[in-house]
Length: 387
Image (tube, rainbow, N blue to C red; front, side):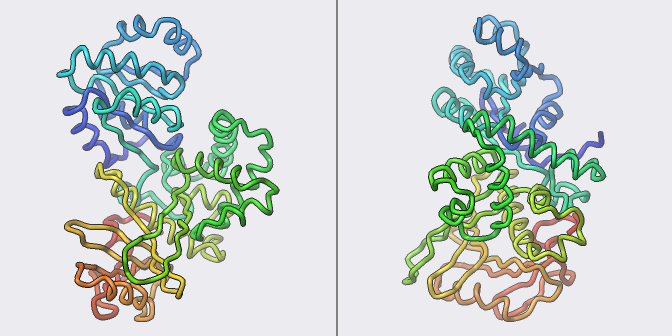
């Protein structure tokens, strides 16, 4: 399999020099295991999903850990989260030893509870999402960034079908004990059709015949396991009545297209979902770039009750802000710049940069309106992937 360098690798190496443990979370099949084994080739590897290994750990966790050669990669540690307490004891017995424990997990509920309770101050925690646009030129909007799809695009339809089925059977059923999987599948498709919209749980619950608390719990699983992104509203004292609902996006555009039944770039471009898909792609890429740099993701949307709406508000250094409008178009017009210009005017004297990003654009930025630049995807994200 061809190797594609992951931007997060540098951050993992740096953290392993500073912390006794490194925890890497993210969606299933996003490349966590491969990345750790590539970045730390001399580390021993142990899969905690193996029933025999689980039985040994639960029978004698101290003995099992004592036999390991460190540094050690413990893969899918959420299956035995109690082992974190024993690792904490080993860390505390030799606090100056760095990078000994390299942990991965997909189901963040049990894993992150254990990390917060047992590993506070002892572990650096990172999230790995599927390939970002600037990590590989093989990326495409209709296929997304899951490594196996990127490297074997001809098998994309079969892979996504299997992924959705496996995800339902393993993650959702184990975390929520979902009995009616048919209704949950309908929920996934309905949620795909709401990509890029304000989250309205009642609107989702009604056609499915389930309660709002059920929708809340299902959404929580999708969000915590890295499949959907809830972009919160931007709040500041601007003298406006603001819409307080988050906007919902699917993290991987390929998975979104699979749920919508869109199998090709031509089908996607003809569909009414192309605009929201592109907008969600920009949201996910902004978050990926922040996570891959070892930063906490910070991205917001803005909408007030008078109709002023800006797709994304991204905080920058020294209190600055970047206002971004995402448009699936080859032609950027001055009308597209009006929302960020109006919002920026109400934020003075804060430093605000206004950007309209389109699918393609001229070489180098150009002014589309006073104080507003038009950028292509490549100029915004810094890559040559396929849109």
